[in-house]
Amino acid sequence: MNRTFLLIGAFSGFIAVALGAFGAHGLRARLSPEMLAVFETGVRYQMYHTLAILFVAVAAARFDGWIVNGAGWAFTLGILIFSGSLYALALTGVTMLGAITPIGGLAFIVGWGLLVVAAVTLF
Image (cartoon, rainbow, N blue to C red; front, side):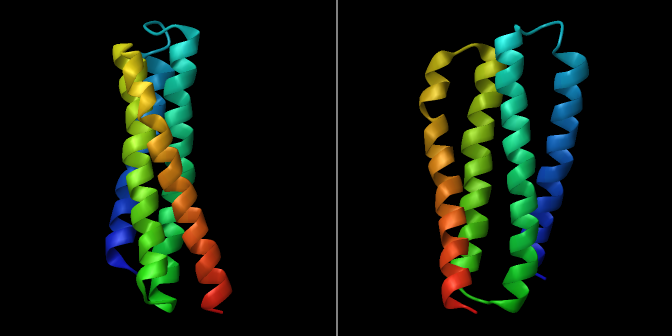
């Protein structure tokens, strides 16, 4: 198992659960329904890709190489940019932050694409 991605995945899962609870209990009265939905989308995508990072931690032990590791780093970058920008948008209301969200989405797509390449070439 790849220790780096296990650590990143565990930490990201911890943060996703904490932020989800914060959103559900601490922000419901403070944010508009639209901004709460934006925050919840960030949490949801963070958790989805946390699970993907944990999968990469396991896969990297079996398939050493840049393709699987690249997927893990792409998922990590995607969480930081996609979810991070949505959290910042919801909490600050600065709509310009929404302009960088697609960059994080692209990182997620790259990560999944690299896993497709790994599945095709490494088996």
